[in-house]
Amino acid sequence: MTAAAPLPTARRIQGTYYVLVLGNTLAASFIWGVNTLFLLDAGLSNFEAFAANALFTVGMLVFEIPTGVVADTVGRRASYLIGTITLAVSTAMYWMLWLWQSPFWAWAIVSVLLGLGFTFFSGAIDAWLVDALHAVGYKGSLETVFGRSQIFSGSAMLAGSVLGGVVAQLSNLGAPFLVRVALLLAMFVVAAVLMRDIGFTPDRSEGPIAATRTVFRASIRYGLGKPAVRWLMLASPFTAGVGIYVFYALQPHLLQLWGDEQAYTIAGLAAALLSGASIVGGLLAPWVRRLFRRRTSAILLATVTGALVLVIFGFVENFWIAIVLVALWGIASAIDDPVHRAYLNAMIPSKQRATVLSFDSLMGSAGGVVVQPVLGRVADVSGYAVSLFWSGIITAAAVPFVLLSRAAGSSADLGTTVDEEREDAEAGA
Image 1 (cartoon, rainbow, N blue to C red):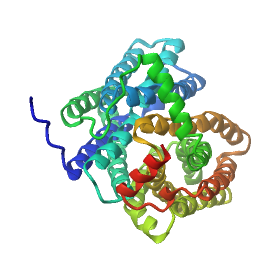
Image 2: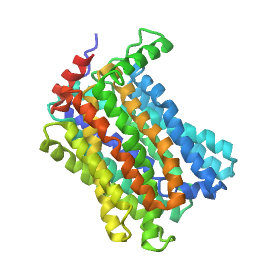
Image 3: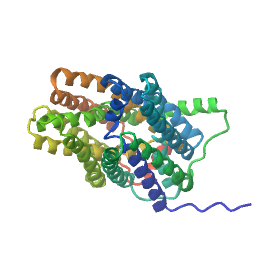
Image 4: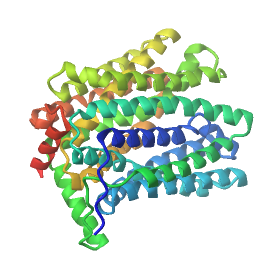
């Protein structure tokens, strides 16, 4: 018999995770600065361009749970690899639609496929990390790991957004999409070499349909059926849903405050600020977590701060004060993310981890589908400042759900190490 391969160290597992996060974010962000211009250049109207973006979100909403089940029944590594290829192919199709000046219905189909590609990532990569760290006996906190990943993703987002614009300026609007395809193919090779499922064995004793049904039911049980998890998930439509709108609304709002709606460099400043805030938030998250006995206290601080900043936006007419507020909102959101993910992972058993994490992402996407058009209409009628004010009010609606999660009394709210988190999650099983 062949001896089993030795387990990698916790440091190597984290290194692989950071490489995957950096590569994914760099590839994704390479088109963010030019995507709308790209769609308009392809012959779409403004309505059709934003409808295509909305269909991308719908694709994520529809496929989140099925692809999470794939990660839990086939494997996290397999889900990541399938997602990389799906996203690379659908991005190449986007480029071809631009080249051929295709009709809207074709863009609609491919936009949904882009959403499908992203859903194979959500849940799978975090589930892979947490299971692997459990298996090798990692003694540190997940906030530290997720905080560092936030730094890598923020750096990659900053670099990708800037470089994508430079490449488009030097070549054409389609070039960044081809660069994204190349980066995704490179990440496929990296993942194929470095990733292997550790601490998790897919259950393939049932057929695919029966296995999907079994995992889905168990995921509902350990997700919505577990009070602390359920209430935390129900906060996501308000925080994540608003976050999607604010990210895109800040750019035209800053242009209006600046007084020159053709100053595209100022619009890019919003993305750069939020990228920098992501880095700062990643650095601060473990420190903020140590200030509080409970994880929900850190989540509440970030949520309330973000809501207050957005409400203040509604009354600010000075560009430079607005810049400070953008940075504060970005930092608050960036601090929330690592703590939220650590808390949620600590309450989920390994077998259902990817599906439940995907369900949490689905809740955020569902919020975005509802919130974006509503706040967009508010912006049309009353202006971006008023829409940002109402964004703060909607964000504040998440606070009662976080308090209910806190009141559920999960030991994960107090957990500080991966060992403690594993014990809590498995006890819940």
